[in-house]
Image (tube, rainbow, N blue to C red; front, side, top):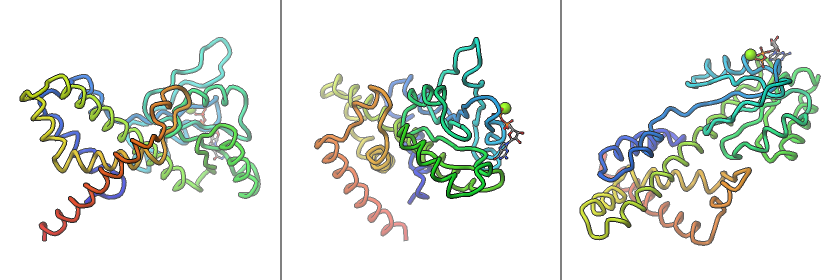
Length: 252
Ligand SMILES: Nc1nc2c(ncn2[C@@H]2O[C@H](COP(=O)(O)OP(=O)(O)O)[C@@H](O)[C@H]2O)c(=O)[nH]1
Ligand SMILES: [Mg+2]
């Protein structure tokens, strides 16, 4: 069950929820959009180089944003999905300004051209200093080196976006069901919520978002861990474990 990235659970959930009467079309549409990976930073920092490297590593929908901090032009809008923020040397004011708007769980900062530091230790220290300053996960990258760490970080950010989409759909279904008291739509939604694709995806989503999804702004406020959230997550995870055990037992 699953490859550890949550991709299989997410795909199964997305397929299954398409058949649920009452699943809002807008949320369905948003859920089916490919996760975009937007590579952002000042001109010359290494955005194009990183876009190519991510594509070679198997990521799709990698997009280079217009440069940040261009005189006479406003900074690019950050997309709703994954943001990879590239900088070199040390963070400058424009970098910090843009990073402050990025959602934490789905943003990765990349200290590019780390080879220019001369030593890996110095590069790692600069990268850690940037993470401490912004609260954004930051990893160093040198030409032809350290790419695996960047790939892992970007993969984790993709997972966060998928988990948010699952949560958004579950919230929307809960609202629809509540408005259809005792009706057939509510029964259908409740049956879906008890199905394997829904339970596995909810469990995956709760685990991912519980660990790592603090927003930079007030979008983060509803993502704080309340006692209720923790209890709900524990129930969902227990149920998913049970089902996985049952599924493993019956598939042999
Ligand atoms: N030394 C070094 N140079 C790099 C690295 N990554 C990119 N560059 C060089 O930096 C320059 C700008 O890179 P580019 O990807 O075009 O930056 P962009 O303007 O942000 O798209 C190019 O000459 C790249 O070859 C790196 O990790 N180390
Ligand atoms: Mg470029």
